[in-house]
Length: 129
Image 1 (cartoon, rainbow, N blue to C red):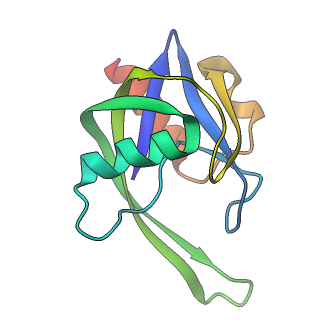
Image 2 (image 1 turned 45 degrees about the horizontal axis):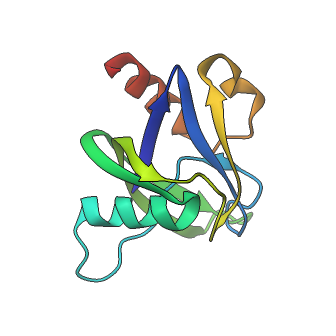
């Protein structure tokens, strides 16, 4: 799951520090722990990666990301649920799987190496406001 956190026509992105997406920018988020509820998981992941405490407001998108190796075999299959969230506290600092965090202006998103499928979800969240 992921968190779409908007602030003054900007979105919070994290640069991934580890494979399989090392060097790509994406929404903060990750995988659920056993027995964890979706909203609890998104809050935990955002805190672990960014130091921010968030409140999930609504689901923006549910989609699948299938990543294949060079021979075409599936290596990773993610089902992603992205929540629109608002910041409720904390202090922004890259942590855990994030090498950097940045508030990216909507107009500057095309300059970032962003994970596949992420831009349309961000745009959808901006439209919902």
